[in-house]
Each structure stands twice: as structure tokens, then as C-alpha cells.
Length: 388
Ligand SMILES: [Zn+2]
Ligand SMILES: [Zn+2]
Image 1: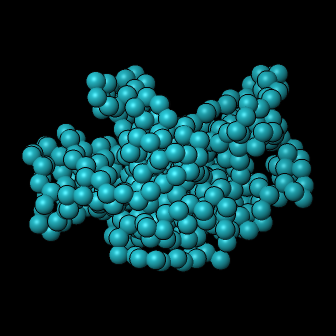
Image 2: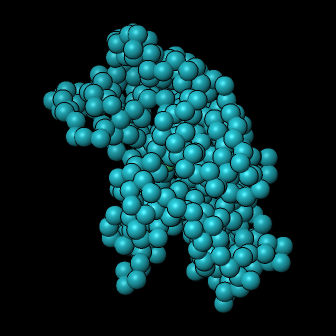
Image 3: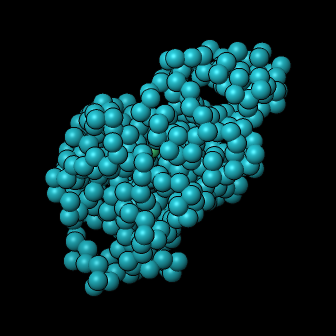
């Protein structure tokens, strides 16, 4: 049995010595292997993973490598387990941990900064200056599970207590995996200014972050909230999550349509979630003078930007990485209060052993897949469509 020194376990949660875990070989090659169950250190716990959602960034990492960084380089053939949007149950406590109990249900945010650098001290731990420096001689205490350390496509993972978000028993496993996505939307909006009540917001791109960006902006009191995109079924979900208006950019010019909806002046904020090459220029023309743009997505190649227009109009542009400043806790509070129904973006569930199929559904958007969730135990060969 699993019984490392100085680690607290419970007979109620027997832990095996080994676990099933997917590991990345060459690009696009994942194999299901057996690994030792990891051991939590100071200020860490062992989480039994119950569910993990697939993110577009997982697809990037598996195919291209970055932003994952293992032992200072690409994540291939290093026995690395990807996956970062997971939730589960606290199964063992590292030395001195009294903030959590064994059996607590938690969801996780990704970045445990080093806690020592300038940005971590400011709460910007997703921009930690010691990103990736977490092995061997350069152990800075930094973790970004699924990016720089082992992640959630496995049965267990070690997490810093700073990355845990307690969840109520009423929240389903699937919904809990979406807290981090809503947390990213929350971080973007709070970095833009936070007090968006009564201010106008456009969200461009109805992917998971964009759709939950609509929901969070609405819950924060923004008005109107406008969503732009090119797929009517996604825009319809945006309306269900609280968008006041949706604009299909295939049918009309989104800049003209936004300005028309707001008396010709443009909106106060744009949260850019599409990653389209023209997105920054369009966003600049959607905001009013002095407006703010949050970039939560990016095109695959460098894009041409009309800087003169941005300067002349005193437009602020923010790049955001992940979910800093405990934004996931604020997002979870909205979800616990049922201010919006994040499960509208969850479409499919698979068992852990079917991860390659789950990734295929996410990558190819089979059956209009948005968020695909993998369950790690007791759910053999399940596949369901949660949203129509
Ligand atoms: Zn993600
Ligand atoms: Zn740091």
C-alpha cells in the first residue's frame, strides 16, 4: 500500500502504489502506462482525479509542444502526463497540511507559482518568473500541472494547496472541471477593470472561454453583452448564457453591427477569444476611445496590427495568461450560486481509457463537441451527449 513518510493517508481512501496514466511519446503519440502514485511534499496534497476536461491547449501541447515545458524543453519522450482541467478528491496530505481534509472535493487551477518572484508576490502567479524551473537543481517550487509537471490524464496528481478550489457536493464532477475555464474569463474581465457593471462588453469567439466570458460578464452586471462568432449553434448557447445580442460575422460586418448596437460609439471592453488574425484590428474598432481589449487567444502566426489607430484612440490592450489572482475562486462562487449554467458548454463524456477518442472529438468538433470530459474511474466506456 501507499504509505510514504510524513504523508497523511486514511483507511477510508486506500491508495494503490501505482496508477494508470497517459504519457506523451513523440508528437501526437499517447500511451496508457503505469506510474507510481506521486508523493506530495510540503504545502501539497495528493488529488484522486475524478474528471478532467480537454482544452484546446492540451491539443496544442500533444501536437506541437509549447506552452508545455518539461526539463527546460519540449515535452516529448519525457514520461510526461498532460491534462490540466481536472477535479477530484483530496486523498493524502503532505507534511504540515491542515488546510484540507482527506475526502474534500476540489477542483484545481493550473499554476502554482514559486511564491518567491516579483509576479507571484503580486498575485500574478500565471506569469511566474520561475515557470518551468521545477526539477532537480532548479526546484523553485513552481508547478503548472499538465504544462511543466505531470497533469490530469491519470488517476492521481500532486497539487499545491494554493491551486485547490473547494467545491460543494451539489456541483457535478463535469461542472467542476469548468471552473478553471470560467476562472480564465473572470481573470480577463478583472484585469480589464473589474467593475464592468453597466459597461458594455463584446466577446469575440464562442469557444469555451468566450462562452463562459459572456456568462461571467453578465453575472458581473455588464450591459449590453454582445457575442460575435461564425457558428449559429454556438451563438445560441451564448444567448442561453446571457448574451444580450449575438452577431454572426458570416452574415454581417461585426464591427459595424457592434457600433450600431451601441449608438455608434463602440463598447467599453472587448474580450478577444477567437484568435483570428484580424481580431485585434476589429476589436480596436469595436471599442470606444479609451476602451480596453483583453487578448485571451492568439493566431498561430504573427498578425499585422494597426498600431496608429490604437495609439490615436488611447486604447489599452492586455494579454492574459490563464487564471491569476485567485480568479477561479470568484468564478466558482458564481457557479455555486447558479448565476450561470456552465454545463451548457459540456457536450461529451468518455472514460479515461478512451482518451484518444475523446481528444479526437475535441479536435475535430465531432457532433459539435465543445467541452469533452474524461472520467477516471467507475465509468467504463461511457459516451454521452449532454447538450443538443
Ligand atoms: Zn485549459
Ligand atoms: Zn514566481
